[in-house]
Length: 511
Image (cartoon, rainbow, N blue to C red; front, top):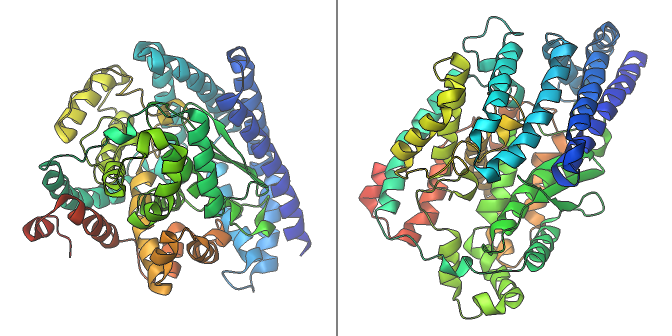
């Protein structure tokens, strides 16, 4: 298969350029001095342009055509046929965007990100507003490279969650909201759990050490990864042998860094579990934003906020923080880490209200793209919508329109739907895993995560991007994406925590 071999060589060269760009972006978000920002934007733009030009070149198309003939008799799910199929899909999308636009966008978002790191702590939306207006313009220009869409957000959503459209996401979110809002109302009508035990001074070094010890037990391979500090935590992959995570730490919040670490480790476990032979090909990454988020949310919440997890780890946390937690009962702590309240900040939101934050952002970015909402009005509309949806006044832009990095480090559109898709899929995948291996919850309570990790690796991780998200969900669960396991999970967890009544279960539509 000479054409396929040549195609793989070309893909490896493109991947090298993209991964080198990722190294520069990681450095910008972790260690780079502010004075490097201008040059860094240019450097990332140059690498992005070179990668895009190499990938979209006519020679790549010729090799694809020839490789398709070489692999046409292979099974659909064979590695070689899958490389050709997935590359063709990516190539068809990429050739529609000019390299000049790719380069311009990359240089702009590098500048925008750097400005955001200054503007957010200063509560200075005005300083980044012109940059956000430029991001919106570039996002629209990107979408317009794909004429024939039903909604201008469709191409941007497609980049992150292939096959999803604005209409299908809106329909799914509407169905979830109808079922979720009564549950939120039922829980928040009761007194919130006392979480004062978490709001104590906790040395950063001790917090970070505890989190690293936990994810080592999860199965995160430190021979192929490391953790560093940043403004807004993320995971990045330089190769399947170098998959890094970042976190942030607040010394007045005992578990903030921990749950950030668990979240990002979920992303990293996914990437570390990909078949090593896929490295440098179009299969060597997660298949969609939604599936990726399903893993971060599964390890952070379904595992990391479970009663069984803390039956094992709470005594160890008490040993790490005896002055803060030595006299705090497990029940009190467990309720504290699962406190439900109408909060302002998405990354701090509990499992029950979290999706309301996502839905708000999703609608705002669609309205921006549609031209129904101007950037100059965004901060005001954000405050109005948050108060309407969550019943909380927004005191400043730091906890409002500036809180999320996404619109300042990437396009407007396609940035947020993956979080809620991930929540839904996390419960669906976990329920399937427990059905196959009923002892998983008991193993978690003993601090043993290998059964769950191995099942996820075998059924999800190793495939990388070989299958689309819908194909993968069907292969793993035997059905399509559904909100039922997620709603059932929320009810089973929060009903005893908040003493919910049967009629409130029926109001939320939980079977």
